[in-house]
Amino acid sequence: MFLADTVARSTALGHSKDAAARQRIPVRGRHAQDRVVHSTPVLSLRFQGESDEDFRRRAERAFRIAKVLVDACLANRCMQRYMDDPALPYSPASVRQSPTVRVEYEQAIAIGDIGSCLSATRNKHWGAGPWLMPLEEDDEFDPWRVTYVYRANSLYNRRFEQRRRLKELLGRRWRPLVETAKRRTKGIFLEHLTSEQADAIRRVLAIEPGRFWRVCTGRELIELPPRLVQLELGFLDDESQDAGRPRATGDSRK
Image (tube, rainbow, N blue to C red; front, side, top):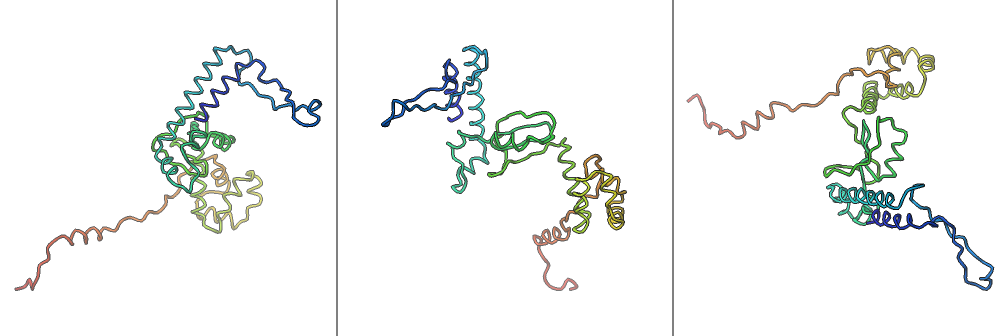
């Protein structure tokens, strides 16, 4: 296991008092007596002033955490499908080297390798976190990109869905107003808004342009008309029920 091996090597390095010292290595050649190479310094993972016993306990705890993350990733059904697909770069060895994990926040979850998740969520405003957690067995995620899963209490997702619904309602012609309002201050947005654009906002959304700016920037959440959903037609059910009934033959008037 790569993570476990790394922890084990770190433990050995931690007990070396001169692990971070540069070594002078002689180089073979005609002028070997005059040539030396300074090797790359080996950095110790020991905290300053940390005792041998404290370092060993910390390394063993890191080993246990790594094992939990790897085992959970291998047990995930989505990851098992990816490992069975030869077109994807996943295998038991690659999972042990870099397991897919859950990086959890108060309002959302990022699923991917540890480094990618932390980098992708660095500037997200998702509340408290991050917390590193193992995959759950039924977690689904993209094989190439970090996957975001928003919690029910996610203001970030509610604002995103509100802006998307605004674009749907405004249509192709007026939908750019949403991003324009989001990126500009209220004064600049209203100053450059044309009378035709303002009339479109009032007609389609029944709100004033100033409030439209607040909605687009996420300062206010409003009730918007729901998306239309095609319902099943009742007569189809009636026909399917009639299909199983015996039909009378002949003239019923006789």
